[in-house]
Length: 188
Image 1 (cartoon, rainbow, N blue to C red):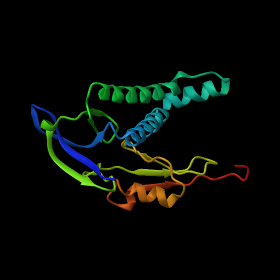
Image 2 (cartoon, rainbow, N blue to C red):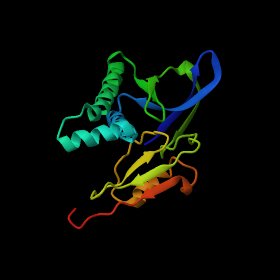
Image 3 (cartoon, helix red, strand yellow):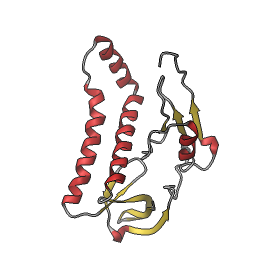
């Protein structure tokens, strides 16, 4: 599969304010759905990193109560997908997605350059990014998360080697990949 990245000017009055974005065809359902899954995971992870939300979740889980704080990221992710499909209904064929999942309609007048590759590597790595490869306790799959809120379209890996290979597409050095081992109980 070929990924197309375009360098766009973000504001007409700021010619030096540019960013690389993934050009995503709305006709490619699989790619849009992968991006949506990545968005949902990223939004949930961001909300669970907020210490106020974690404390509230612990309280409601202990009391057996429903907590809307978990529903908010899911609702946001659903609205993201709904807004994307609305673009298609309005006749827009492509959208541009940034590294953390924000998007805008594609406008060829804003494009300053194009890069295509087959491995999905962004043309400009995020400075200071650390990607964590982690397996939840008693789970069999490995997942990725970024300290810079990057959205990963492939999110579940059977082996730690697969996860690290995918993570290398986004960072310049292996030192930017952190592995968190979680113990597995004999019961899981």
